[in-house]
Image (cartoon, rainbow, N blue to C red):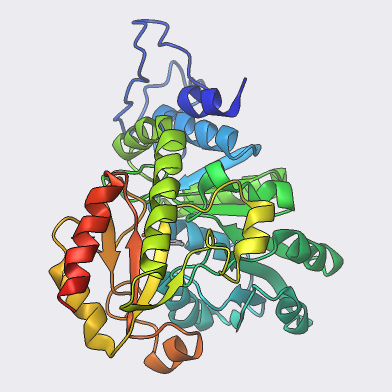
Length: 380
Ligand SMILES: Cc1ncc(COP(=O)(O)O)c(C=O)c1O
């Protein structure tokens, strides 16, 4: 079966009792047993639910992995992956990760004596140089949020294997349409399903995919023990969202490529970050390991910070909003929104300036997106 077909169909066969083409929604907390000790594979929805299981199987298929475990948000997924570690362990992490991830690591995990070293993972030698005797995991985002840095996964895999480290890749920005980190040796692939996978700003969710049976069993245990599970309804909505993932991602990527060129040629724009531009520092690795560049762009305007704010307050079609990965184009000010909890000095150190603007390019007609930004740029 071709990849596009798997994306639409997942593992679903029409419902045997009704023939329903769309999977039924099992919105239930519990299941009636036939006899003591005899159930039909389900006893309580915190442990397992047919709709959640179908979504997990669907996502494992499109990520070309063996196992998938779902959680109630991307952050609950990150938290569950951290529960694979023990007090005293050390993690090497990309320096430009989603602000919620670094907040979780720095303000929660450090209370449990887990320590972190942040490096620019675009240069893989930085990872090797940061290894300590207690290092247990390498955590990368590629492309990163919001500076869209690309990590060379093959190189990092070698470092992880040589040093017996778990290799986790947050692939939320790339999606399985453009990148399959398991092929490049990742042990854990993380997605916030809130973003492209569900695709319409309709829910919060997260998943982790792995080929390793032992890691899968541990994550399943964490899922049922902690109980940060997605609702059956959110899983059902995610299944519907995934059916159009391939089409949506092609359009997001096409629109982003055109918009990135427009911005790069605009006299009021000083810097455009998009891995699909030949001038971008991530372009060559992204071209090797990804099959498309996805729909996220960051840019800075000439002049002071107020220019960035002015453009965000002047758009009418683009939505000023926190999230990303939806069919609607969204514009964000990372310094005051998604990364507001990253201390200013840390933001500055990693190049996340107050003037940076991030756009999640939607699937509207590109002329309308450009028209909106053009009129907003005129006001700057
Ligand atoms: C790359 C990345 N990972 C994880 C998350 C967290 O996901 P959620 O908001 O679903 O908890 C986000 C949220 O923006 C993200 O951008």
